[in-house]
Amino acid sequence: MAKKRYAHVGTGGRAKFWYHGIAEQFNETCELVAFCDVNQTRMNYANDYLESVGLEKVPTYKHYEFEKMIEETKPDVVIVTSVDRTHDDYIIRAMELGCDVITEKPMTIDEKRAQAIIDAQKRTGREVRVTFNYRYAPHNTKIRELIMDGVIGDVYSVHFEWFLNTEHGADYFRRWHRNKENSGGLLVHKATHHFDLVNFWLGTQPDTVFAMGGLNFYGRTAAERRGVKEFYYRCHGSEIAKNQPFYLDMEASETQKALYLDAEHEDGYIRDKSVFSEEINIEDTMAVMVRYKNNVVMTYSLNAYIPKEGFRVVFNGSKGRMEVDVLEDSYTNGGGDSAKEGATKYKKITITPMFSGPYEVPVPEGKGGHGGGDPLLLNDIFGEPVEDKFHRAANHVDGAMSILTGVAANKSIASGMPVKIDDLVKF
Image (cartoon, rainbow, N blue to C red; front, top):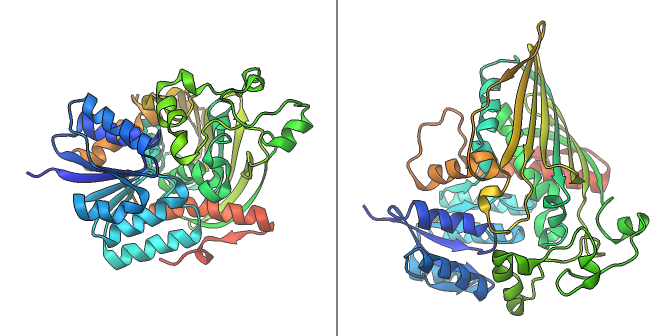
């Protein structure tokens, strides 16, 4: 049987998860045929890795040669792990050129781009897979199972808090994510995971969104308000930065040095800017209310400067209450060990029935990144997927519904008014 052919667009830190997975675990049935990026140094790094594990290097193409890459290498599937604001362009062009697509979350960053992807999928009939690895984490799947089994009855309300700490959370304020025009802000880039989990857990879609938010901890103004007096543009080469807790030493990380510091001469991208920069225009403190189409209501908060990493979610239902507490290992994106990304060090699910005492639910253990979800996702995409009663595989509709909560929240923060999801896109 012929191997399925994959071209890979965007070869930054997260891309390693995908091309490592194909090369190390699924190379008997899958084949990388090309890399595409704005930066040749990063593509060379990816090719050097392929050679290091005994595979042949693949052709490389600059971003403006995307169509040429498709024509010359004839992939079956395009993997998209580029900057968020470019996802839609590659997804749409890949489908129009006859390829299916696997895309990192978020699928895109606003409603216009989402509508364009939806229309292109209808027009071409190609498949778009959005990679929500948190769905596959055993504790998150267990939550879905408990709700499906009616353990707490009909769910009426959800309270969901996500904690980003001063290692992982701060890192979004150094990188391209710090600008909303690149990432949609954390309510799109990061919370797409969380909003998708709620859609997945409850088997529903969002209807109405209201939100508030601000930049209270990071950024120049917030820092000055707290008495910070010394500022710097970037960490590398700065003596001031070395004396602050948000210093990032890219030379200490082989991966960050190779992918970013050594690649700056090509595209000018600086990976280690100050978290207290005037350039930052995303929020670090966010509160969202959502009503879903099944009339469940949710209160949600996301803060990017908490002394711990993880989440707490509570479900209130007709037969009782479920409380979930998860602590995750802290990490810096692109630090070299993808298995550490979102790995759990503590998780607990407690059920309190309506008229009796609480009990703890055993939670299956998972190994690997994103709470053990990464290996299961890889197998589901590249290996031999098993029958899945939880329907964890996510398509473009799921991708759209996850980001649209964040898109609506951004609009609500700007306008001070609630936003209806059905007013944003048409399926």
